Length: 273
Length: 350
Ligand SMILES: Nc1ncnc2c1ncn2[C@@H]1O[C@H](COP(=O)(O)OP(=O)(O)OP(=O)(O)O)[C@@H](O)[C@H]1O
Ligand SMILES: [Mg+2]
Image (cartoon, chains in turn brown, blue):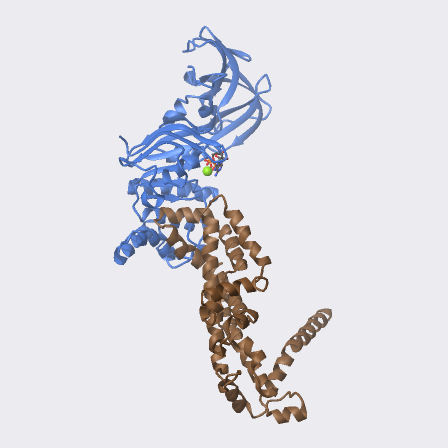
């Protein structure tokens, strides 16, 4: 009896929690499928209307910005390039950095590690003007390279990979060496597959991080051609339903990435252990 | 020149620990060498220097006529079986065996052939598609062996590979390793701190203490003729009995008895060693034992008791003798089977 009570009680709590998170999103979605005059006169809607196609197509293809040079479609493309670039580059550099820190036992490895770690305390926002001036001098303003590279060195990911590598037993390296593996092969054949789940987790994390960037893209792009989705949220003009539609669509890429990779992520966790 | 030669090898770890002192030894092709000694005596260090996993502070190692001091482990053509096996957790058994071959650029078909042959030899053919985590301890042990065998290396190195197995499996694997080594005929070095394992496996046995080889010989020679107090105490189970005494003009006097006509010209304080199995009961024996405890092993009885001076003493007798707790035995040493060591240096003097 009490068991039934506590279990239904916890279900109610969970249900309330989920509702608090989901209902607003749902209402934005439902509202984005009505005409804007309907929303103005009747307020936010809970049920789906019949202007879905019309609204979403218009948002995707509408030429926005001051110079009417950019569409939402192009922004999605830009954001996707940027987020993927940041995720790939930061996972790659952190993997390599952690490998060097753990396996090349120089005297200064610990010192170097803490030096990298300290950069967590100096986020991009703090050093944004020097970073900008470097990019400007290198002529990398208004380019994907300029969008991606300055935010792609991740101390956190390096920390995670380093801690993981330190748990890999030394015998594995020794055994691999005796089996004829050089340093490079050990990295490719052992550390990368062994840290597969962590690589995927870091990829998701860094993808979302890259996708959510606002201040840096705002600063480093003056051409509308390089606007990203998150910038678009602020810059896009239009009626309320179109903004709602844009908000809804802006959530799709990160959610999609998580859904797709989550499968591998869980698979990896259960197979390899 | 032998197949593997260690010349004046010294190892000092960066923190100053001197793990191996000026050790020399040579191993012939096809020989099964065992390093035995207490924990921390430097067995693993010596083995790992042969493998190239530890830098050699001083001295030279030659393998098959080539100096290998500076040769990278990946190029030494040596295979090693680790205590915890160090199987590759993300590869199935087949790939565990094949990995070393792939790195040598052997073509796919030859690899398959070799892996299947090795798997058959070790009876692991049924598990080739499994990951190591899905194998029992004994099966993992076989995979580790297979990974060494499949490459047909110049030398096998084993670092206490049996210590993670239960007692029964240990004995079984011990036998199999010996058989396998005889079949494959590869020169091997086996490290253990278990003297039974050492005695049963070795063609040649190196007893190591504090980074120095105390004695290097065949197991039976070491058992029959230990050169030092340490070797005498380490080899043999149950352990040899030791007593303090004094040697003067070929007469040894210990607590409660004397031995005359000792074959030694040494004079001074000595330690007398007698193996439990080299004693028998007789009237008016030299040694008087008060029995505390009898362990019946079936074939033998191990009789533990005390001498007059309350020193612990062990006597091994045939299992068909009945000996009661508290009884007094009178024992004689069989055929002058006793060992006398200089008390201060531990060197054998008779
Ligand atoms: N990396 C190291 N740095 C410093 N000292 C070490 C290192 N490895 C081993 N030693 C020391 O060297 C000595 C010999 O160690 P070794 O591992 O060779 O012993 P062992 O005979 O294999 O012992 P066991 O039977 O316990 O494995 C020990 O005193 C040990 O503390
Ligand atoms: Mg050891």
